[in-house]
Amino acid sequence: MEQLVLKRLNKNLKSGGGIVDEGKGYFSLVGVFMGNVGYIAIPFDHPDCRRDMHDEVFWALDVNGGITFKEDNVFGWDYAHAHNWGTPEEHVKNAFRFFRIRELDHKITIETDISKIKKMKEELLAIIL
Image 1 (tube, one colour):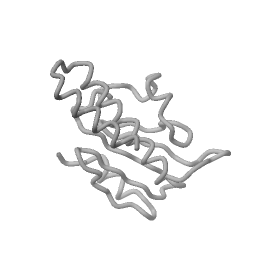
Image 2 (cartoon, rainbow, N blue to C red; image 1 turned 180 degrees about the vertical axis):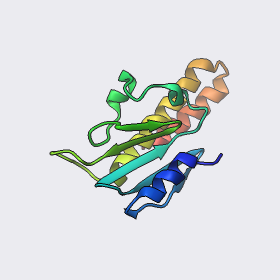
Image 3 (spheres, rainbow, N blue to C red; image 1 turned 120 degrees about the horizontal axis):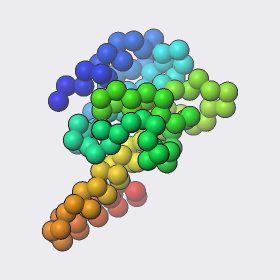
Image 4 (cartoon, rainbow, N blue to C red; image 1 turned 90 degrees about the horizontal axis):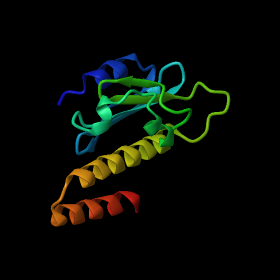
């Protein structure tokens, strides 16, 4: 599916940029706007697409300063804080780990087929390790 929000954001960056296909419907974009920024797009059918960016579920998301942007399936954060930490690339990895684990967790709660649950467990272990 077209990543229209990411394409628009990419055009606004002063440097860096370039949308990266991370596989399985996930995309990333890192660059400089007023300062460093990071964005990720999750699959449109991901259960978190429908959540508000201020939902307490995102408090556990380990990105600099927390989520400061959400539009459609795109989440973003910036580095315009007094005490920035880490790199955008590091936080993109953290965000993907967070959303992929949440996606698998959601699937596990609705699946009853043992073989599917075992496969998801293997995928989860591959993400964590």
